[in-house]
Length: 430
Image (tube, rainbow, N blue to C red):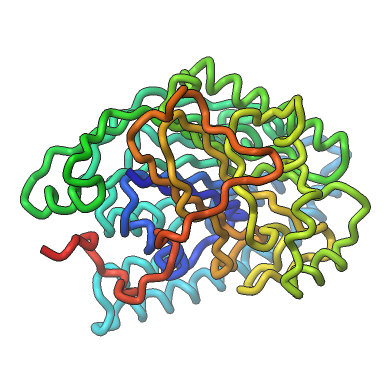
């Protein structure tokens, strides 16, 4: 059974549907379960932003008589900006209506032109490829999302528990019952997967090809933890990250029985940076020259993983054999970095399992350009049998597991069409 785990800090922006389709197209090939953690995924429409700004202006006016003058002055640019955005929105809506009337476009392509949030587009993309959105196992809070999908033809999914760890965000983490300000913390989901009943010869053949003719896949429990940890560089912020992560993992043990899971995955924008006195320009130049691997030894998470008091002791930490994923310039495919921050591998995926497993791939996807983060994804094959001795798989601290040479579900597939109007996932040839 292949499990596909991905993380992306969306940056509260709208994402183009063709970029999501290209990113997740490979996940439909062999994966049975898909876990996607999103951070800063609260997309506010222009209309919603206008209401917030108008409310803020009105509040400033009535706050006190001595603030009336200042409130009026503050309201003028807000109202002017509101008028400008209204004109832009009407222009965009008019263009969308014209495009929607184009007879050359298919129904799903016309739907994709409508401005929707990234979660809706992710669900549409994967549902069109044979995955079912497990709403009961998925969870959200504030600007964070943890989305769970399963391929109905291969496995059935049973939600077990979900939890939210509100930690690591200081003042900005107070939810205020709006679901908007929760920016840091953790989302936890525990669920069980089991073989699906074959509904026809095609399902049976595909299950045999993926799991083997004699393989009897058992019911497996999976715990997924999506995190967004405190940001910034420095020892104090590193201590905050370690404390927040320890709190989230403890809540996963208490509320979701993570230690009893056959597979646990930990993913998200962990915000771990590079230690030492490094300059942003020098690191960015090394990345441009393809010499970024020498900086991995300075990665805070890698150093913590090899320490005796590691907060992620017992977890598998795959080596990042790809350029740093933060802080990249928006709208650029290549890793071009904002000089205000030292490039770092902030976005990570870790896993822990007592089963025989096979790391297929671990990579970033640079073609998504709407955020200042690049998404990262891991493909893991659970072979089904417990390892001798049980317990989490351990490797030498100086060498993280390298991806296999087996064809990955992240690899491009020229045989798969980029047409968005795909209603069924690809089946094996009969």
